[in-house]
Length: 314
Image (cartoon, rainbow, N blue to C red; front, top):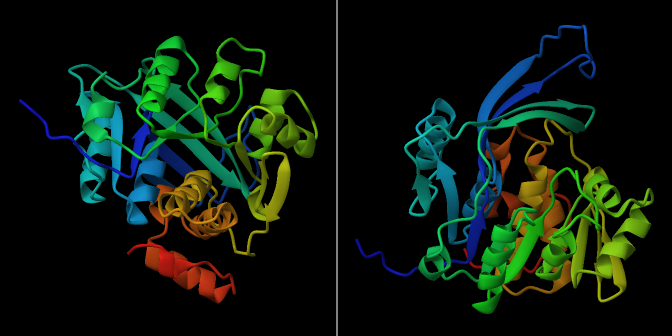
């Protein structure tokens, strides 16, 4: 069957997860002890979070993702339908593709225990032609087949925005520098930046990554974000909020950033939107706390933050 070509703002690639989010723990879990959480929330995770964040902000978003015939795949696809996500690029496989994470949040930070049944493969070859995106949101995948997919996107004029993941790699790991060289914007958090560079000081890690990527926006939790672009640095402070759960805050940050980028706002305004989105999302639980554009505007007004919202399309 012939599928029409799309013209989307953002194409999201990468794996789904089903998140079990525990909240209200008395302390960080340790071996030999049993804990009861005050709350448990079961929500989609993985790249679902950024797909939902972008969609809620009104961006035309497509998510290319593998799903199987297992329970976790079914739960996430059903929630995607309820949340109004566009499923035209879902790749439904007749086998199990279980991906699940147990997450706990404590004192404004979080920890994870995850399981992924199968390797994460890039989307089918014709995905880029179908989606025709302005931006590709790419998880940190530097395997040869992923690098080929990203290079194909670049050849079609697509700009690449990448998040990071907990680094079990360094700048010397084969493929990592090649991946960074494809990026338009890279947005790790402090732990990811220091882990992959091997530098203990986040400021030094930011400077090092800034030598490899045109724009690096380092997420700094409650402190906001630090950005280096062409050797020049600026910081955006985060508003004070009562944190309920930090899960998904990085994805909301990315969503706000891309809202500004798609609407061609100045870089500083894009980062301001990112920080506000990330901060607001921590006041709820999981991906479902990602704000709508109206909620973001109201939040910015309450905190006296000036954003050129008149330039952002509703």
